[in-house]
Image 1 (cartoon, rainbow, N blue to C red):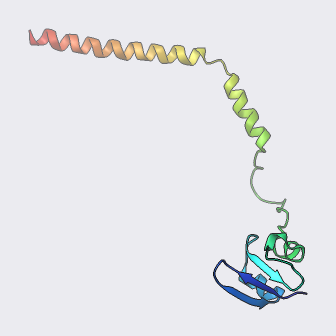
Image 2: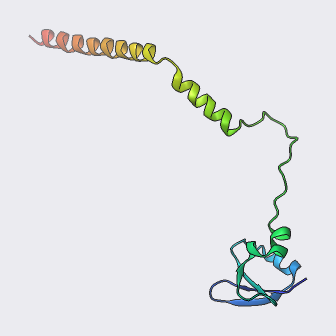
Length: 116
């Protein structure tokens, strides 16, 4: 295994072996160099590092709780709601506005007649 040098833009540090790099918890964008490289590379571009440091295990399939809906299922639910006939909703909302407006208007008229 190679030994790597790190550069964070201002400070050059190293050499580090693989275990030391792993302990530093470097990111994919960390600048690294080892003997044999022409120039500095991001750690995510170096095959030896990419396979070992940045591999992500697959999600655990057995868990307690309902399955989370996929993106397609969520989109289908949104589309279903969009296709719902909204005329009754607007009709009820309009009726409520008329009823509340009428009550307010009658209250104002009654208060005027009481003052006279």
